[in-house]
Image (cartoon, rainbow, N blue to C red; front, side):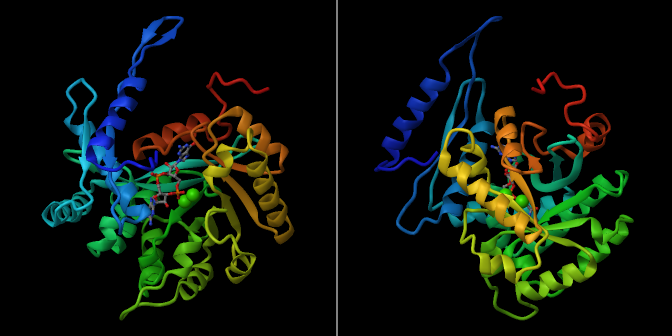
Length: 354
Ligand code: C2E
Ligand code: CA
Ligand code: CA
């Protein structure tokens, strides 16, 4: 959560106490009272804080709190001015972790709403940090970029993702998120082509996920090319393009026309409000309408409830992704999940279908 008006560390700690206090109240279930415990990470913004930097700090602080806990909820405060040594140490850890295979791709199913069948899997990076546990990409993507490890990270994730889908039916697509650095990297297509080929996959199975921001941000320097160039090359290889987080950036039609997209993903924030907020429903309806006119597929991401799924289907959305179906699956869980739920995510679940 973002809290405004938190003047200093003490006020931040007080807020953490209130959150702890509320979350640790017992819930009364039929089986008896249950308590949940929380690990709270706190990051304080200063005048030059960025949204991504602040989120990364809060996330890391939460992981530190989680790693330090001994039964009781604990909290950790991330200093925005996390000393340079600490950051350097984490970057060294990441470099070593990438070599040691600690960074892997978890895969989240993309489901066709009407049939319930899985049509694709999106690769989401996870770092199995030896001390901090499983870290989400928000906690280390910026670090990777600052340390010049983003291209290696991208390759490692692609390798890991490809190796998890080799035994799956060929119609199952594989979504890869590309960073700003990857999009400007002259060697990306060659390397990606090799990685895909090494796993015996056809490049047509790749869905390249890009955000508007990533297509606008430029990287200067030798060996750099424009995002347009990279995306053209990827398309020539046979990959398709998906515009991620649609609705959160400029969401400009010019932009959509500039890139030969096949799919847009409606951001989770709109899906979250699609049942209760007319504005969010209107945005989803507009994106679905526009996409159908332009011949683009639409994926709604972050679907968590049956009600959201029904509303999205009624609005004409055909594809969805989210915890309702499955969170991102660890590599060893992909095949078993696909065997049990790949043809219909409801198979074997007790979820009502009305
Ligand atoms: P994204 O591409 O928008 O990915 C969706 C994020 O939403 C993922 O977070 C996913 O775990 C989460 N999510 C999916 N379904 C639900 C749901 O039903 N409820 C909720 N609350 N969350 C859901 P994650 O894995 O933490 O990834 C965050 C972002 O990091 C991604 O956002 C993507 O932009 C970036 N990312 C992840 N992996 C990579 C990677 O390998 N390379 C690059 N460049 N970026 C990556
Ligand atoms: Ca994505
Ligand atoms: Ca997204």
